[in-house]
Length: 88
Image 1 (cartoon, rainbow, N blue to C red):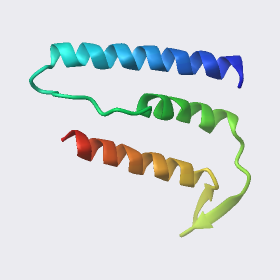
Image 2: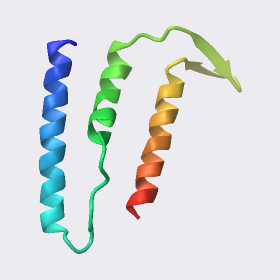
Image 3: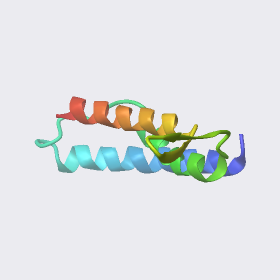
């Protein structure tokens, strides 16, 4: 694994852990718990995926151009919706 990616993962983990801990202490009554899981790392690495990984194939759907990376973004959008539903 590239050292840049390792540094990004370490920074995302440290930042998300501290922000979640701070939110639990400050917003104790409004937010009783935080969702467990590596969501901060997953969503934090999406911009790197967008910038660094080239699209292998391109296709048109209803006249709009897309690439094969569309499916990764759709799964991330679905996971975000599931996290949002469970936090309510």
